[in-house]
Image (cartoon, rainbow, N blue to C red; front, side):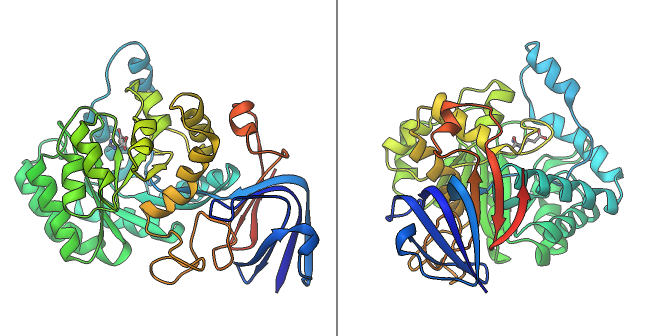
Length: 394
Ligand code: NIG
């Protein structure tokens, strides 16, 4: 059945079609069939009047860690009192997650997806990485796959306390990878001091690639390092965090298909210097903005907040920030439009509102999306639609 959406003050297509004012959109069977000026809209079986509101593609949150139990408010409070972030806190969440039942993890992830919808997010990636043994990582992968389309194996998040690093990498690249393989599409590694070295990271990524997984890297978060270089060399879809970059890292990214994913909420929560999103865009790098929802460094899925921060503090224009949180995230997940609204695998693309793409809509309770930055922190998400179905209404 076709649904005609009218009453759209501005339709931000995030494509070469630009922003259409007084617009309409037709969705059929979850896919966009038509966009254009309202006075040229074709008829449809059903009409939804959005009452003069702005519509943009749903956020594509390409970096989250939703499968966890417990929280680390104490660690956060100590950080706000001057202690710096270190990867070791991951072990605290590992303990809480290992002891949680599968039913509880399922409920927690479902809640987190619902909260994302309430914030305008329509596509999610999420990672394992708080199990850190074969059984718990496999369970996390299965839980994640029940709720989210893109699941990433992050057994290489931290060497669990007491384990030998090389033996642990053997486990990650052997039995753990084997146990999660059928439930994940991606593999990731925390390539950072205190986590995994360049050589260990390379082993993890190469094993994932041999198993048919796409590659992602946590890199250059806490200091300059090999993360970006490795990600580009191995053709990773994204390298995430990217707070500390050399000129050579930026050049490598600019000459590659690897997306640089910035995580503004995490930078604020860790008091890390904000990732140089402005410099990256000026250099021609594709930038994605993601929430990095996790209990250690970014206990939020609020993409509106991340976009606002990117504009106000990282000096992106609103258009650039919206693009990074929609088409940028889609590119980081290889779900972007490569023509006629289809992604590289011929599925409806994400992060753009063009015919052929997924009818994933974020309706703001305002006539203009500039309010995302002009009225920071206001509850602007009014409705969220995934594949033409309403999943959230304020
Ligand atoms: O992306 N940096 C590594 N992993 C997470 C944080 C994990 C944690 O501290 O629990 C991140 O920020």
